[in-house]
Length: 108
Image (cartoon, rainbow, N blue to C red; front, side):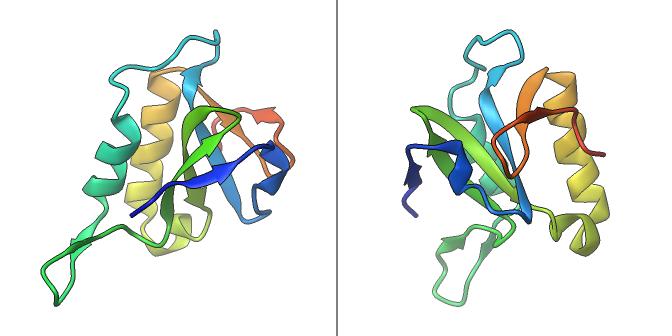
C-alpha cells in the first residue's frame, strides 16, 4: 500500500487526527518505521492472503514527516485499540494534530 502524500496539514479530514512522527520537542521519533508497525498491528489478511491495512489507520507524509492518520471512527469500532494508540502517542510525546493542522492534546 502506498503512502498518501500531502503538502499541507489542511488536507486532514475533520473525522481524523494525525499522529506525527515527530515528538512535541520537534525531534524525529525512532524507530522510523513505527507507522508501518502500527498499521501492521491493526491489519488483517484478506482472502488473497495479502495483508490489508485497517481502514481506520493510514500512513501519510505531511510536510515531509511520516505520520499516522487515525479515523476517529476507530474509537467506536475498537475502543481498546483507539485507547492503545492514544496511550502510545502520549507515552512517546508524539505531536497530534486536529483537522485544522493544529497541535492538540492526545484525545483519549
